[in-house]
Image (cartoon, rainbow, N blue to C red; front, side):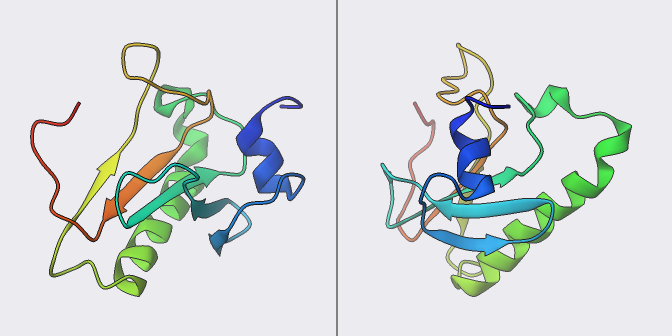
Length: 114
């Protein structure tokens, strides 16, 4: 998608601090972090939200969760814990219409969120 912020980041047209990348996905630091660790994991293929995925997107789903596992291990979060967040739509406060997963950690998180 030509005007999608995250597509531009994935293509390398907008700078971001990339912390993980494969052919199918990439992860970068959030520019407005809510915790000491706040990473966004996105598919390189444009998808507006989780419901945009279909059965043909299984490799992308697998790549996203593989990225999460890698980043959790790399950042030593397995013992202390972390939170994954997927916002969808207006009520879900999705700010960029491109599927993205927030990996948040390295501080105690409260419940309920929001």
